[in-house]
Image 1: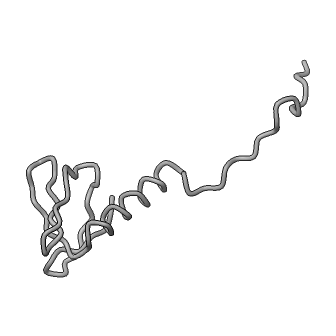
Image 2 (image 1 turned 120 degrees about the vertical axis):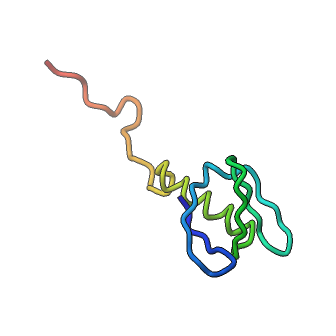
Length: 79
């Protein structure tokens, strides 16, 4: 979900998975897979950045990589 602003300055939260395409006219026009059309104050680049940022958070790509022992450094299995 990404936060955007309608042309009338009303805030909204959009499920970015529903975006079919974004047109750049004097306004940013977002067409959803449902056929609904939204006009927002953010630029197309800002919308794309917010989608990328959201997906990175969801998939944990902003977190530092987990440290794992190198092959051969693991302690042997013991019964």
